[in-house]
Amino acid sequence: MKLPQTLRSTLAVVTGVALIARLLALLWNDRLFGDVNLYALVARHWTQTGRLDYPLKFDYFDPAPYLALSSPVSQHPPAWSWLAGLLTRHAGLPDAYAALQLLSLLGGLAVVILGTLIALRLGGLRRACWTGLLLALHPLLIDFSANGSPYIAVAAGALAVVLATVSPDRPGWTRALLAATGAAAAWNFHGVGLLLIPAGFIALAIAPSRTSRLPLLAGYLLATTLLVAPLVAWNLQQFGKPLHSTSTFYILGKLGLVSLASDPTGIHFITTAPGWPHLLPYLGLALKSSLLFLLHLGLETGFAGLAFATLGTLVLLRSRDRRTALPLLIITLALALPCLGWPEFKYRFLVLLLPLVLIAATLGFRRSRLTTFLATGSVAGCLLFWCVQIALTGSPAKYYAYDREHLADYRLMREASAFLRAQPPGTVLSLPHQLDGGIEACWWHAHPAILARGFPLPVAQRLIADFRPAYLLLSADASPSELTPTASLLFKNAGYHLYSLPPP
Image 1 (cartoon, rainbow, N blue to C red):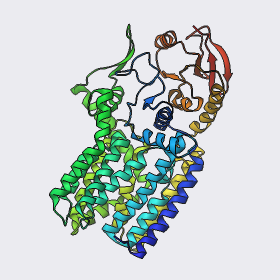
Image 2 (cartoon, rainbow, N blue to C red):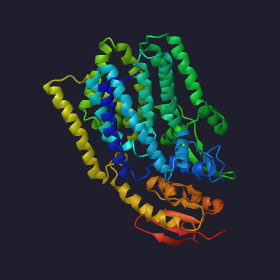
Image 3 (tube, rainbow, N blue to C red):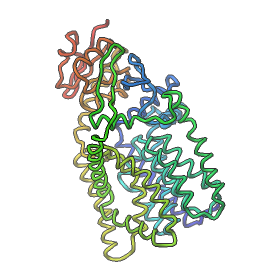
Image 4 (cartoon, rainbow, N blue to C red):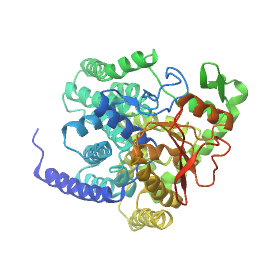
């Protein structure tokens, strides 16, 4: 269908603004943070070996063999890394991190375009323009469109499902394919998207439709099944079950139900099954996480944005579009449940729900002096909050919110890693307590590595005896004398010390 000229012009302007902002974000996103390191390491390993494995000793549980210096991707589905590997190999990109950044850039642009089209369907051209600009210029969405994280792509997948539900006049097969692609891609990119698959089916089942509903739902199920089949096959092959996630392992760890055991077969994490006495501690952690989530969501919308979003939802519920509002709430709930139920607040979770909140906020805005003042204050508050974060962190990157030490520490780690990269090949036992236990260093020094942050001294000593590493990476305030008397200092700075260990 040919789009009206006004709409095409609007989309062109909004997309252009979004692209410029996100290209600028590439300038300050020069640090791989947290799980982005895992995605990048796997992507680089795939380009070199054709295997979707962690190229380091990362997992201390089945099915990873104890003495192996690699293990199947376990934390997240492998599709994000695989796509980055394809781009690295065939698109002439300099490395896997650049490929991940390109993927997040595409996801960020998709969020802007899809969100604008949703607002057009629900509120008309004026609200679509405001929605597009908010999505294009929001600092958090800009940042996550350039840092290599898959969360922005998961948000785009959710918006694709929403657009399918609010397009009753479109052919059923196009709606089914759009919703299935969005839901399946979200789960293939990150486990948090799993609930979007059943949510998408329910949303399509109750959303308005001017075509037969049976072909729509059948098409959705068929397309979703085909699109998630590779991930299910991967899980069956690697882990012996169709669904695999380490989320339960992490939650048990927060409840104190995970211990480290050293036995004749190796070093392993042992889990204890939770019981009813653990329910209240878990609920307490989840409540604290939820409150922090809502607080930061308020900060990211200037708080007035949350009020407008609530009004927008009520407007839909009370209008002839109320059959559209319920599917929107179902999809929002599918994203919110894993975020609010997680026992620790993660700043990146905000990316999943923020686009939906901004869309609802524009729908709830009704022009008057008071609401104009509140809307202007909301946008100004959001920008002010970003400026405060820049002052606190030393960087525009909101991924590192309130973490000025990370920037200084990262530079020291890069210095140590550059020295280590120039050394002869050898395995690195990485024990620093900064930067997620040295995982950030693994990307930069490119040696095989063993991660063992926080492990007891006898366990670390056994790792040295069993793996015979060539190098030992420690925090500057740690001493190797307790671990091994044979270590020789190679490099030191204010954050890290690097030692060599004699060959066996």
